[in-house]
Image (cartoon, rainbow, N blue to C red):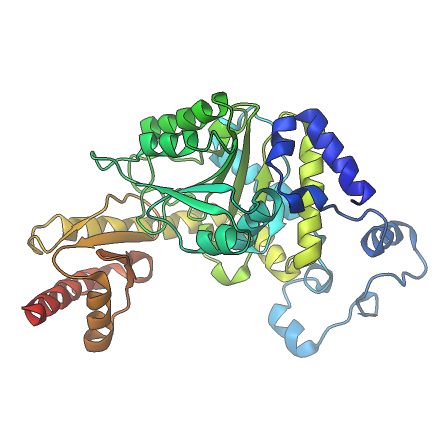
Length: 434
């Protein structure tokens, strides 16, 4: 094993042996090279005042070389802020701005110790880093039975982890914290579990309320006290889109100093929060009371980034930073939030109107982009195909009964027509099956 990896491992083990035990075999082996092209280029950037012949970019006239046909569309930006490589950890000013934003929007982070966000290529990349660092073959990844299908690819297929599901909702149609607790305690034999908490939930659009949030935290604490090392990841892809009386912040703050056997990791990004899906700007943030442990985890994270994408896209990071620093940012974001909230409220109004009889129920939703219908007497896939082939409407079938509808991409005046047509498709399928 490389001496740098050994040094990082020794730091992590000294600061918290439970977190060291959470590392995968790759997590133990990975490191960020301190002696190499990047480190020598960084040194040259600060000292080579005459000629800097280190890093692999081309320059012209003291600026990164570029094509006018491209720069003409980006003329508001300095070439150095879009054409050069971004650092592997991301643009420093963006990392600082995102950390400030996190603290402002998550009051429970007050007084907590957590690292500087590292820029990822959106949230999937952040989750992939978590999987690489902490998931080995056979490790349990605990998620609800209503989940984003990419978890299976990221943790299961890529890393060989075992996906352990529990029902998302209990009998009262609230978050099933007892099911989470049971699934975690079932891992006592393994001594380790990775938990992914995704709120607002994809596909159901559900976020727990404050009481349910405390129950989730308690379930994770119970598992830790029972001897399970818990890597708990808050997948905050749709953060901020809270439309009703739910949690208004990430559980990351509550989990940050929960127990010595709990490592809290926040994965979030501008992707959905700032409506820049194609920019692919995300972040991964670790919590720990130990600064040296946080530094070691960051170095290992940079090792994964260096070995996969090298660094994230610089232009996207510059664009997001520009937005965060703009005095108009908050007002514009509030405007879009109100549009999204209006759509969610209109959907709930339609579903609660009684106009659709008893052909479906729906899972509780209060946030995010989506909601799920629970169809009765017909299969979701048959209805999906009928909607697509006969009416030109796209939805997502999940399992036998669940049909996910993204109200986020349907303007409010058209929602009534959308659900009326889904109802008609259900009726069509029902008649055809008789």
